[in-house]
Image (cartoon, rainbow, N blue to C red; front, side, top):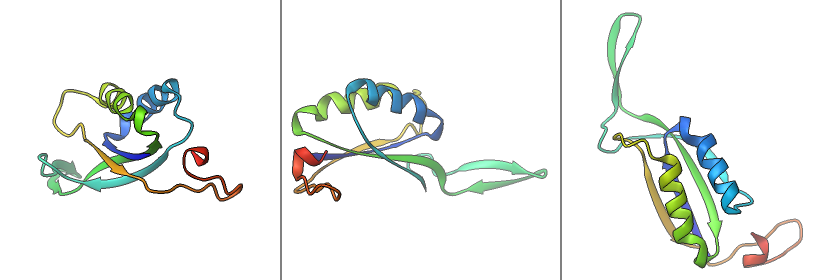
Length: 112
């Protein structure tokens, strides 16, 4: 099993959710986060004064999938979240050694 984490632009969340649902993903965790990469923040104007926002609002999506589904998931995420502008985000893939469904005690792939 793999944990796939995607950091995307917040306005792309609905498109990404629909794309993952059509792929057969049955659940995901979504978190509002802030950060920066090559963007280095952004300039905004508030009450006539310009100031720099060092951390840009992003949305983090976590999905655990079987190993054989990772490449399709990555490609689906890329297509759904892409805007062709700087700050589109990143995708990270991590190994998951165990998963347990709290309610039933199901383990690993059965717990997904």
